Length: 329
Image (cartoon, rainbow, N blue to C red; front, side, top):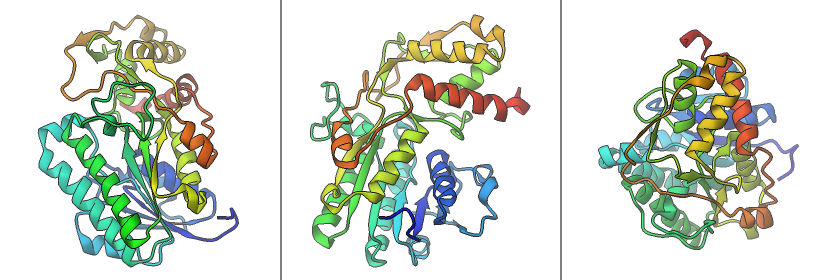
């Protein structure tokens, strides 16, 4: 796929954290972008900077509604499917809605993309698929049993994508995201991701709460690495499709490491943040103790070369949050 080629990409969940960053990237590339979102977890303010862009189309709709999906895929070349209900705790609290969105909604998108003869369907998979597999680093071919309803739904996505590839000849690629963070990630709400939540608490001089002893580790992945993977997945040769790829940096840090970096970087803006204490509580149900991705398959097949480590990404993210959350302080 040449950079100069004109094409239209549908980004489901385009008002969300990852989706809005993808919308912005492809608009800046000169492509036509269709965004489908029901704003259940996405935000209109994520779209403000390009809402009136001539190449941008917003469809307010729900992937659980087949008609909305059919409308969204009209005259679309590629689909980047980001729409989902994230969060392990939310899925434990409400497994029915998580399943309706993540499984039924995913199937609606696959069927309508197939019928519209979309060239390629790239979707957000999840590192939660590795479940109780204890081996590190995580390699795509070896998974365990899921530890939450959310993890089940994301694994089912992979199974459906594989069947649609084999049965209908669709080109699909699943990207197993590992703890993505960065600009536009929502710090508010009961199911906020750990990094924006900790940033906001530290900015407010409140003590972040770590589940467990802080020694659980994660492969934190900056948003620009994720954008790179989505672009590479669209450009990949046909020999590299109909499979899944880890989308990560390939390095793990403990939650204690994470908070240490955040305090250091935020203290540059407000020295008082360096003295904020950390609180600890019991581990969360369904949490995986350690997560580290092998990114060799993506390097070999897609040419993936992540540019942002946790520290580099956090410095970018902290700068963005300090600018955008000022009015909340």
